[in-house]
Amino acid sequence: MLAQLFLKECKQTAKSLIYWLIVLVMIFNFTSQLGDLEIDRAPKPGEEEYGFQQSRDPEMIMRSTLGQLVQEYVRKTYTTYPIGFYKNVTLNEEDDQRIGRILKETTGIGSHDEAEQLMKDWYTAREADGGKEVVYAGAMQTEPADGLSYERFGELMDEADRILGGGSNYSKEYREKNTEIPKTYEDACKEYEMLIEKDRLTGGYARLFSDYMVIFLGILPVFLSVTRGLRDRRAMMQELIYTRKCSSFAIVAGRYLAMVVMLTIPVLLLSLVPLYKCISYAGTAGISIDMLAFVKYVFGWQLPTIMTVTGVGMFLTELTDTAAAVLVQGAWWFVTVFSGISNLKGGNYGFNLVPRHNTPMNWQGFHDGFAQLAANRLLYAAAGIVLMILTVLVYTQKRKGRFQNRGKIFAHRKNKSEV
Amino acid sequence: MEKYLHIEKINLKYNIPLHILISILMLMVSPLLIGVANLGAQDTAKVLEMYVALTGIVLLPPVFLPEQDHDIRDLVYTKYVNGAAVYLVRLSGNILILTALLGIYTVVLAHNGCEFPAGRYFLGTLAEMLFLGGLGLFFYGLCDNLVIGYMAPIVYYVAAMGAGQKLLKMFYPFSMIKGSYDEKLWLAFGAAALIGAGVWLRCRRKG
Picture 1 (cartoon, each protein chain N blue to C red):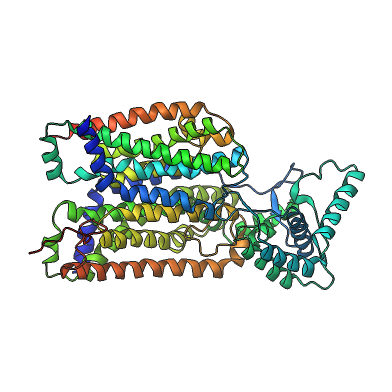
Picture 2: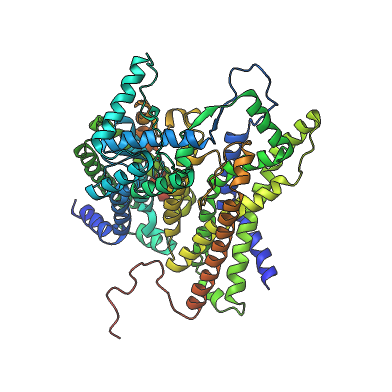
């Protein structure tokens, strides 16, 4: 029964206008972002620059981060980007004292006056050196206190970030990002070798492809699932379907599976274009590629997002009989995409619905953050299934005559028949 | 005049309260998510263009929602008052609410020490709000589907974030962040055209 319903739902989806609009948007997104994709060539010696990389030197990270903390502590205002938008945080006395204690432990500076004097001395020394370039806020560096371990430094900076509400210069991703250093030719060669040997070329480009596609997949599936959810009601077929012998699980799971599969197919088809480019390049450069890399990344990286967003759409539409899921998912998408902007190069995936890795390089970052990414993707795949099961429960109740609010949020508020 | 006021009264009482509530909620939670104090002109433009303007998507496309059911629509179109007039009254009401919300928000930003040209930013953001809402209204009218009405402006917004000015040219919605207002004029004219076309398409579906 489930297989029959699944096939029927696939046909229904293939006939719906919204599905083809979604496919068009996917094609548009792909061509505008990756249409002119060119495979990176091996770096050559003597080039002007080879890009930037995050320093992994703990001493440098500590000095830069503590320099920023001293400056913001003196100014009593802290710059944060909790969801990618600028936010200025001014602390109350209690939190200011907590930051003061952190500063004391990490640098030995015991008061505002001491910090201010240190800042003045630092800038005076730079001016005396004739260093006109050192005028930007993040330039100051402060020596860490004697015996401060990098682990303890990390713990204290995490605490400072929590006090500031997240997204501050002291969060893990920012404090590493703040110490970017130029890549040397050797660094660039090493990273290119990682792309060829570890990622076998296609792995890196499959991640880049996933990064661009998952942004739209964080919102598009909700339009399909909401439209599908409202269609029965619009066509006045709800009651007729309720009376059928088929189980609620088969009906809902059939629809859910059909939508997830139908949304995954165009993504798989689009992945053939960068795969073809990789094959062409690999043929001329003599590289052995992983032919299945794109398939693995579509299922491992993008499918969990499709599953969750489809689940949100189905569940909220079944529960409310309205298009409210579009607004809910829209809000979730907004927060998740803007908060991910701080970590575009990958490596720190957290529990973001839309994990970012906007480069074919940085295999090391991907490798280091793989456990986190795997947990993230498993969580969202499970969330999609849980939402589908919740939809089954609501659907079952509706078949029993409950939850019949027919799109009205406050269905039982007044005007009840006295009869 | 009295009948038009009555149409708007019904709209305010039954059709739009939830959408107004969502818009107010969006604006009220903004200090938790983004900075709304002591911002420079560029950051203020970012708040208005990338966040506040989204209320246009919430408030304008649902103008056609009460007649989503074909039977109700047929009944409404048999009445003496023209269907287009009903939509235009509702639209005017919703645009007034949108303007008021934006006005209050702009005053709050200025009061919080943000430095920006208030008049220009207000008009520029209003143009973008109307364009986003008008896009939704047009596609709702064209496809007779509220979900597509929400999808069109959201896709436009996401496309603007991704491909940006290179693709959207004069219809780039986040131009104030870059200090340009020319695009806002195009958005204002575009909004008028889309809203007009949306209402016309909706009324054309009488038969």
